[in-house]
Image 1 (cartoon, rainbow, N blue to C red):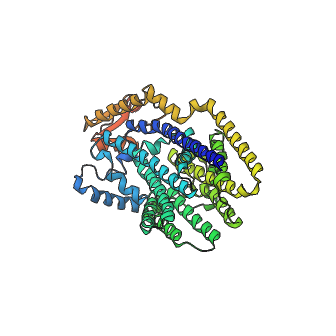
Image 2: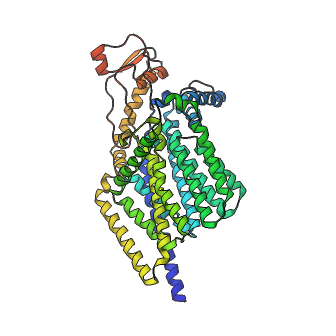
Image 3: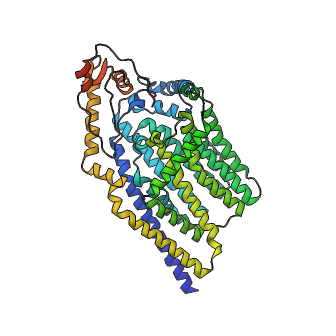
Length: 496
């Protein structure tokens, strides 16, 4: 008995060490993105869709933001929460780069902390709170490996529409799991409020929350043979937020032509298959899937056959649900139309849902083997995960965190931000003038590129000129070809 207890204690210490190492590695991989936010810049929609509060006294900011949100709700799109937050918290209200960068860094840190909180609650569900770091690493490290998501991390409007709602949704699910553990009505209310608010961002995130809460409700019902009203309330909360989003008149003002549902489903499926293949090609995601399977074999619980089938099928379908509103609303049919911020939500769904499905599969297989065979299976899975992880190492220098860290080290990101800062300051000192921007800085990995158009009618040029009071803004090619304009521009449509 003493020998067995000693082995268990040693095993616990190893798991605790692995947990700390995994959390430290994940934080180190995330840190370059946070530091790159110290050099964030203003972009098109910061000057246009969020311009209603420019020049307003602080006391009037909320009223002006609400008025602008209603205007956008009726003429542009139904993202009611981000329509309020974008102008209300827009650092351009004070032309403050420092405030912009603090806000972007704060949003990123909040997103990371929310994921840690969720993983802590998931660890409690497994009966092992010490697994928080390992779970955080499994979810986040593969996602950070290949894409920079600069439209979410380094753009004010993108952060308000994508990162903030997703953070709220993650916290909503964390409160839901904690409520199940504590049986607290207050936590249930918090879960419902946060999930409702998450429906006020883009529909990709709102749809993800509604689908997952509905799936959780149905799987729990099948497993326990009794519906849990708490899950139903959480689903209704996020569904209400989504409904307010979907019914916005602006969605239908902006949409053109009829809706092609079959085409949208096909496009969504194509996007998920493409992205899953892309992520698996880096091996790190495949290694994470095997680690999730291994965790399931060690800690998972066997479900009823019908609830297991529903859970896995629902989880595998979840990433297809996410891009469906995008494909339907914009009549997209190709992955080439999906922006960096769209991939951010799709990847979040792919990693979370596929890894959870792998864990459930491991739990379902847990009782199928004898003790000796089970140990052999676990060793095989662990060895395969280790091999895949080692295969990632040669290409690690081209991974997104390493490239961003390198561009911070060599000063490219800082130089890019400084040059654009100078251009913005120059525009602010030339009100009423026709301005020619001779050279635009070269971008690099780790920045969200600011791009001026050639003509004064280009949306970015028009909105910059309106904000800084310039008569017009053109680039050198346009000035040399057509001359400097003598009057102000008329903006092209800004499609965001």
